[in-house]
Image (tube, rainbow, N blue to C red):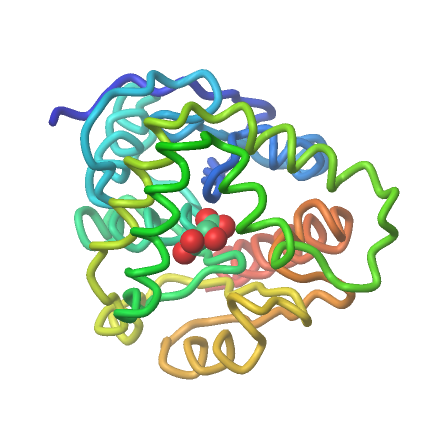
Length: 264
Ligand code: MLT
């Protein structure tokens, strides 16, 4: 399959910052961070293939294919280098992008994401979920994911849960199964950690069952230039659960390495 033209939004001027959403969300996941960071950065938020306004082509959405879509977007926008960060599945895409074109990164970030491939049990769970999505649509994904996304002490009335649910339900079933298949067969990327030599942000929530702080720390330790940030009172969705703290962590990280560049 060829790379496709992605829908995206772009705000602000300055150093490009690309934020990739996770599964099964879309670019609106980053709404708060776009508003906050676009005073100093050119913030670009694509809808990955099959999500948001981007076309839902058929076939397996391999992480390398999704990465090629993002590369094509960078080419179209004439962006040679950007700080590229991804949330969860968006992080898997960021890793695939590093494999394809490390020279396009001025900085790298994993937000509630990790480098490890699926275990056999996780692959089986994905296979089951694919079956349920084919029968019942996006609601099966909502039921499977919702209990793991938010910190347990989050107020049940909190509108962000409704926002997340609405985003998930808006994804077409074919995109859900295509992305689940793509994640299921993604390669392990632990070998990349020592090679990612640009400034790297590893950010996770303190109560994320999917990427707990110990795992985030384990990755950061193997990287030559990593900053680890653990966001308090957040699980898998720090950009929604703690939008200000997440934006501030990204800003501090980007500012500190820009200052370091200016001084050297
Ligand atoms: C995500 O949030 O993108 C997914 O939970 C990632 C995954 O299922 O591995």
